[in-house]
Amino acid sequence: MTDHDRRYWHRRTWRIALPVIVTNVSVPILGIVDTAVVGRLPGPEFVGAVAVGALIFSLLYQGCNFLRMGTTGLTAQSFGARDGKEVRTWLARAVLLSAAIGAAMVVLQWPIFELSALIVGPSDNVLPLSDEYFYIRIWSAPAALVNFALLGWFFGVQNTRAALITQVYMNGVNAVLDVWFVLGLGWGVAGVAWATVIGESTAVLLGLFLARRHLNRMGGRFERASILQAAPLKHMLGVNRDIFIRSTCLQAVFVILTSIGARMGDTILAANAILLHLLVLTAYALDGFSTAASALAGEAKGARDRDRFVASVRTTSLWASLFAVVASGLTIIFGGSAIDMLTISDDVRATAREFLVWSILLPLVSVWSFQLDGIFIGCTWAREMRNAMIASLLIYLVFIALLVPPFGNHGLWGAFMILMAARAVTLAGMMPRLLREF
Image (cartoon, rainbow, N blue to C red):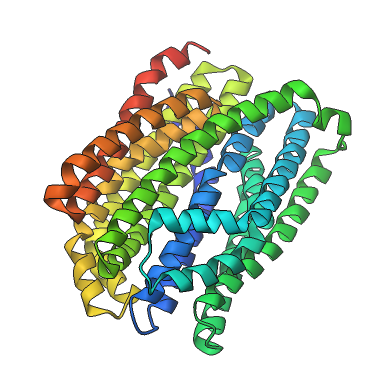
């Protein structure tokens, strides 16, 4: 690769990754704002209630993250093949599927919450507050999932500016309303939920407007027969099914982590929630390079160009690994201060500091699973992602049983780190065989 080629791939990587990093970081920042606002209320049960409620929606929405991931990969490959008609049609298919799934969640809200509460097992103080949060926020589920589809499509066509605008708008509105509703109007946990509903519902309108502008520049029009064509729909559902299974297994990990922490007491639950916010902040930033890998690798696969594929993987992985080192360093320097900003409880602060080391070490391990995820998503190697995640979950369960009884919460976090390493190893082991597709 010449110096000119290297500069070209570095520019392309950052042109996609930087807006995605800003977009993604706004999501955990919102979670941090939620925690900081309710952390000003007396008692750890308020932080715990938002943590449990947010976990339930994380389980629901991340389980449906195939709406973003699958749309990115399928759109990127059509984009690489210069098939404008399919680029347009993937958007319509994804939006229709997202709206239908979101509507189903609204209809099934009671069994969803009851089952989730049974699994997570919040304390008697936390449960009624989590109930209040959930039954308000669930009404924005269709809008939230359509936002997933729009983001995936924007990433697939490499229009990261539109993705940035919609996410920054949504999370900015949400954060402002958080402060007003909770601290200004005294609505408590309900205020956090209403802020999210308003932010998600208005952001989807903005996203659809920006998508329409992009389509107008492309030209053409939607064709109902193309949208409902059987073969592409079957392919989309197959990809989404495998990504759904993979995402469900990953969310099971977070459910296990939170539920075991909850059974260790409200203080451990609140401390782990804060540490997860720090970890998710890093994860969302690293996802910028994963998304760049997804868009560029998918484009290369659509064009059936092995050299472009290898260049995109090398360049995005280089920047991701450097960013992981920076993230760990920043956590060493600012982790304690971040904990103090997120809670006024001395017990929660001390407990979170005791386990902060895991938030420092995890980015160095998890970066590789994130990066490989992005490559596999872009190439729609969904079945292989599914199989790798199932194997990693089984490994995680074994180490939960081995490490938690003797080491408590340290064992819980240690098993989580082993899971991330297992995901990277299993995905990397499949790469040589999959490369033969080129």
